[in-house]
Image 1 (tube, rainbow, N blue to C red):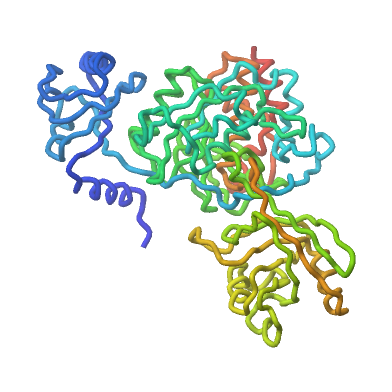
Image 2 (spheres, rainbow, N blue to C red; image 1 turned 45 degrees about the horizontal axis):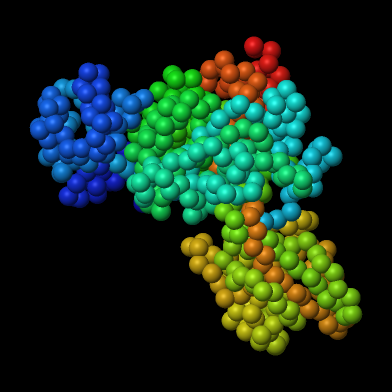
Length: 544
């Protein structure tokens, strides 16, 4: 049974109430009381409210963990529900909210490195390894006017960052952990999501052509998401830090079906402070934009593929502002965690390396291996009957049944791996399992025409082998509205580098007015269209 937003919040809060202590957000109403509490926190760090002399708050048995000065908010670890009730009844308090968690952000698919997708604007790519989305949003055409984002600062609230990544190190300014997993100094990215988003925003341009949208902007990282998810406490604290740091943009590739009052208050205060907040529309494909993207001041971003068609997973609705590249987006991940596939085919006496991709949930082949291929049709159980697959690789066509079922059938027949060939032009990313588990088979995809040629060779009794390897890299291809959002955050960085005077509302208006319209768009599936950096930066310059 699906829970509605209210029921979901209520169930989380009820579950939390069973705990001995309660971590709560306390939004203060009385400015004088907050100033006193904030000064005490600055002087002592974490301190006990009880008998602190803090007016009526001194009756509460709870520990002040943080003071969010720009939000007029305290983070308090209260002893139990009785003490939470005291906070709620205190005349100096406007609102008390218990800690709740949103699901941690993750891409719809990804974690492998693939060749950059081709686009109709291929000739404008600065280098062979430039991600297709950089061209699609017309970032290179905006660089001269915006000085590639120099002077703009972007706070990414996410899973952390690999601060020593060669494509991030020069543009990384500082980071902080708000999850409580450290003393605040460890913002290491153990997931890859935050590093990927950061590279799309402001990856340093290298000789191969890899670059972010704003390759001279600065990145700040607020780690607000842990294995438990992204808590309202961490998100509020991260936004408070962004206001304190006076960043230009906050990029949030996170969220869900609901937001809390404290999160909404933090976003509103960021807007009032002149910051532009950009957030992902969500990945369940529904006609309802997720939060915080759906909040009025936020720029909600949906995803398109390299043909500029809406991605199936991209959520949409009246709040959607613009769309950006969100399918097969190559960007930075923690060093050595990306995966690139290598497939060399040996047909008779001839060999050739071919374009390929690997699969999530497949056995990795880091040292490489060579094996014989056996044609196994569509990979159905009947396709393996009478064939010797023991210790060999199955050659399987995509189609009719899932990738996972094809491989399970191959394993049952004794195969140690498989080469799947597409049933349409090009390559795609696939997953063999839905729970993150790994099957005991190496699996790679090759292109349709190559696979058909192998089938023909096998029918002619020509020996066919494949040498395969999974190569560790520092880059990977993800897809999701999480990947579209940093494209827009990067464009906002170019806008702010061009004109610092623009408010968040003005930036949002410029993005919508200058976007390239797409359609059909009867349900606002595309918002105002795909973001256009060149036109947006020119409009920002004209507004000076």
